[in-house]
Amino acid sequence: MVTVGIIGAGRIGKVHTESICNYVRNAHIKTVADPFMNETTAKWLTSMGVENTTQDYHEILNDPEIDAVLICSSTNTHSPISLEAIAAGKHVFCEKPIDHDLTKIKQVVEALKGSNIKYQVGFNRRHDHNFAAVKQAVVDGKVGDVHIIKITSRDPEPPSAEYAAVSGGMFLDMTIHDFDMVRFLAGCDAEEIYVQSAVLVDPAIGEAGDVDTAIVTLTFENGALGVIDNSRRAAYGYDQRVEVFGSLGMAAGENDGDSTVRVSTAAGVMSDKPQYFFLERYMQSFATEIKGFIYAIENDTDTPVGVEDGLKPVLMGLAAKKSVEEHRPVKLSEIEY
Image 1 (cartoon, rainbow, N blue to C red):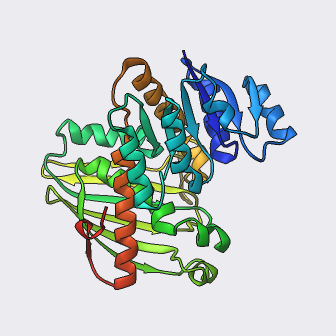
Image 2 (tube, one colour; image 1 turned 60 degrees about the vertical axis):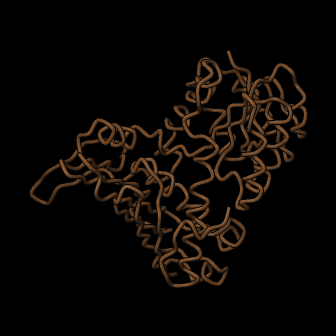
């Protein structure tokens, strides 16, 4: 049994609390810390079986009974708390991104060198049942040599302009998941990125210095091409699809709905819309990624999504931003690290 502490009791911290308590049998949450811990949140955590709640995350880092920490706090705290946790000898699961600052990510990479600390980054979509099956089809050679990877990623509602202004922008907040997914499916890194973008959903997002609609084209080390299309608002729900086309065939992962029922009548053919929110769409993937983290700790293996996997999508996000700013394709080698 691995004893864990969770730092951050906001939306994603609660998701991980719920998934561990309900689905991860060989992990136990001892303490959850949040500087804004209140009576309502503490009561809910207690009802889930969490032993302790606190406003000071150092209680987790200083507790010798806690083996691992989940960093689910705000993005600007991810790398500093990672460094503290590594120094305290704790295994670390860090929600994406590690940081937007490459220098700070490098500090985490350096801190891990020579240690036996397990470090995993929270790119949960790799662990979705549909996308994992597409990846397995690629690994098994069913599509042959990969030629084209297509990802559709559209949110049901845009964020506030205030959030857009502080989140690092769409490419480091939303598309970063797609950058991880396209690397995962390609089995190698991207060499070049080119972005066409616009503000078509909410003018306030543009006024905040961000975009809300984009087409990203990529070239990969293995010669494959990739296309990612993003929108901050899809009227019909959370649209998440992938396709890998190769020399022998194609594998595609479709949206999940509340059911797979399709009703056909004289009036037309009807089926459920995609699930509306990422918590509905990806809840099981959160449990699966933590199972992988716990397995790595218990069996002394590599984590499914290591620190380098956390770094590469940030490099891609910065290249995408540079492409938008300079209206040209950008090679990943241009992003200094």
